[in-house]
Image (cartoon, rainbow, N blue to C red; front, side):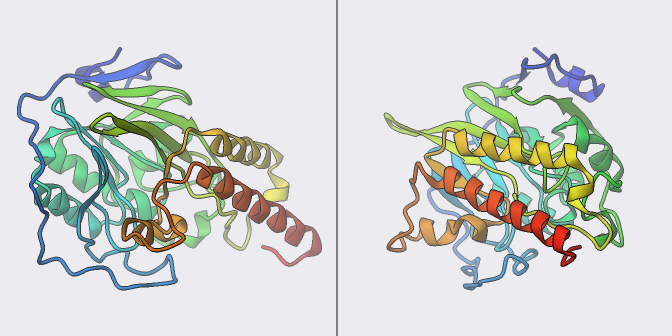
Length: 310
């Protein structure tokens, strides 16, 4: 098992090994209500909106909390021993995520690890700020480490040429592997390699409980086959094969509550509001999400063959 001192040295963990943080003596209990002065997010049909607009923080289920923006997910998984924060959204969103953590009554310094879904600006640019606010190392799979550590992507990213600028580099990035489990006290979050949208795409699963009722939480990475005007998936068969394996992985995940890096992709806010026909708990959601991603990938490959893409 690895502790924080070893993480700071950026040494890789053994494959499949748990990554464990020391317990926090000061982990807070949540406030009964969050900041009620934060306006509700406006309804939107576009995943490109609300990225830098603060969303009201709220409990999703048990010890899993939404602390992101109106357009980008950030999740806080909490325990008396310390917390885990997943994703950092954009650079302007970093302080908003920190404020949401505080609004719930938690201390950002009790966050023991930062995790990431994939190495794009809209999910990683706030991580450098959040590392400064929390003191926590960032854990990521090897294909994402260089981009997260420098803020600059390479040609392994299908969308590389779409990004005119990089994002703030994250000083401390620790390499983990597919199947590794990150532990903080009773928390156990498992990394699942789901590349395709990016090379380093990673999905995360854990259990959250309310009383005696425990549910499987699945935070699945983006599955859209998007690219810049030069990248052709059909010219990267290894990437396509990894993409398909990742979709198989997502379809098979334990998945009572499905969460995604863009909340709109899983209709999260509608589900939290109890919208008819959109249940929060839906054991088939990950399977349908994977099916949608597979259809998108096959259409992309067909469009490349016919000359419609990129």
